[in-house]
Image (cartoon, rainbow, N blue to C red; front, side):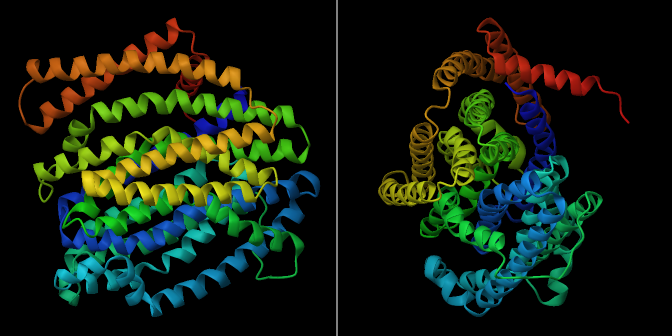
Length: 527
């Protein structure tokens, strides 16, 4: 495996880990304050609109459309040319997103009513959702610009600060939960409005964190916008299909939210809490590895070095499997104790724990699929194959919608999580088959061998996890939080030891290289 890819992924992963942990803390705070009641349901639906665009911009269209073009300018024309493109893209995003925000505020009521009409049966719930939607819509502009900053820094091999920037969103939301939420009633506003304010402040903080790093690289903002610039037009044209091509997971989650609004109070929140926990390994492993892989693949494509591109993709896939296959098994086996330790307190009840854990188990089934798409879909745009991921994404959304409509009748809200996971796996498999055809192979033999070794090691880990969880429930009984934490920590520790032993016996290269990289980083003395 290319050491530079592993180092880049580790750099992004370290920052992303911080952000994702803070994201879980954020959900802990929200769960304790609001549980899974009507206010939390309303916030989750209202937030889903700007959050959908955030995910598509930050981890989707912006990466697939802007990063390859920006990297091409850096590689072939130098930094000045790249900075000029960056200025054009930033100013174009300001114009486009401000128009969308204004339109969204004007038409918020019919938009919310179209997909959360079931909220009308609960007095005030739909109105609260509309109010929160209008409050949070300006978040779109902040996050679009933050994504542009992220794309430029990633192209310059600066991964840590961009990956850390979402942590600022979580910090702002947590701070507002304690400092602003208690003040809301004094202003005649619902308490949950304080969380919406935190979302806006968090979006701005993502920009503020990245700006100094970009400035040190030599970027100087200029209020220049030339709609006729060929590179800008190329980026904007690619962002349309880029959004669709990477939209499957987020649109599917959005569809889940719509269907869940009809499953009674709490269903939307249970799915959201479960998806947040499942998204921790996606953000840490899938997005981090994808973020590190895309600039490298784009550079090799620009240099017309197809063998190097194939090798880089194979490296990324192998590393991703080593991290995500064990994570899938761990989340499925330990869903209930994980949810209980993280969320079950104050307004979040044992019934909420059981409901959230059920959704988490089904979401975890698609973890590998979600993550593989983070590598495969942007690669097509780097290759100039824009239509392929668009068609695959449309097919995936249709498959997901059909599955969810059928499964929600059988399994309720949990069927929505299962349908999304099956659709994610379908998306990943189809993309990989087509990518293999386009690149005349992706070192499939090496990737398959790695997968089989990782699967066997993960199966051994799963047996140990199940046995340790059962044994510790007998040896360390009790419902106190400390006892729960100790049981969960010991179970995870046993699981990791067995995984490490199995990986060593099976000669899993990715595990050895990953551990060596971690040890090198730990051995470095603080600066």
